[in-house]
Length: 100
Image 1 (cartoon, rainbow, N blue to C red):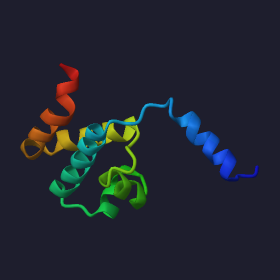
Image 2: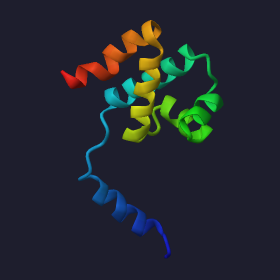
Image 3: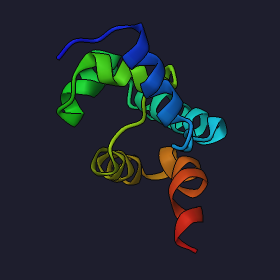
């Protein structure tokens, strides 16, 4: 398959119909990930290994470039629950509000 300026502009035209992820949601997820990782005392690399993802994934999540898959967010929720009192505020802010 060949890509040129015309095919790229066509793709961009068609992407206009796809809603973008809300900035606040992306930022919220980035804050959750970074705060969870820091409270666990892990580097991005260590956190990535714990979740079974690449360092680049964690780095992109924390910079709001991408968002983790729902299954990874579930793993993070379990980690936060296991933190006990240290993670209660994160659990309340990022996970329990959606289940009320």
